[in-house]
Length: 317
Image 1 (cartoon, rainbow, N blue to C red):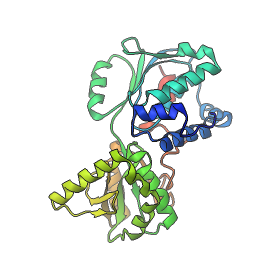
Image 2: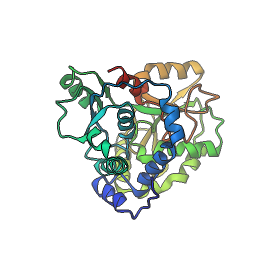
Image 3: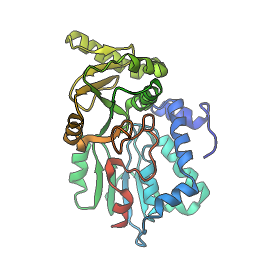
Image 4: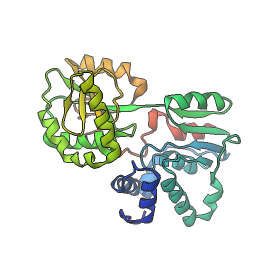
């Protein structure tokens, strides 16, 4: 992808369409995709699959919570030889249409394999991302076709208490990049009993400019008022509220945390919430198979949402 800056018309129009899509966040998403869409990485990603010679029409209902979040599914459909019937999110139409048009400018034959549609009553299979509420509708309406339907998920971080300031600065990105709106954003902390949050709050100052975003700060102040009125104990640094709460999902502007006393407690929490956790962020030496601090929004191409192999699903149609 060509270099792009905050004054680019695409960036400006996408921000007008969705005020959560700041120029910085859009450029971050574009930079990430530029880094992974290389011949070597695409070949490595696809080399373990045998693609079908029977193209199908795949309905694609995209999310729009963070910039270009529908990219991975669209790439899977195209690379597996199928046709995408695209229903954009109204929150992320500008960027995804731009990407579609960019591909068509490179290869005009792709236009008939990326069809923009209003309805999906002609699809042979479906990939849809939405909320727990919309997933029930998708399950009912598309019960007659093979489907991947994704619900609400969130991510958590497990701290050992031995993290450095640099580790916690990286974690601040996992928490607050894209305002915490992505399913790979950390919305929950597991910390050892007696954990001291002083270093954690020092690290958060690295991303304190988030307080200047009006929509985010309105959410923060709303929940702060609720906690104060209810006399709910919490920690507050002026732009993020930490609250001791067993729940996995925390509201925007907040971060829930729980204590553990042993690895057994950690394992029990992860098992209980397995179907709602997207990723676990930690030191991989402390929590096996976890995502290192600062890497939550930079997944490898082979990492599939909800751990459902999209290529395998498409190739078995």
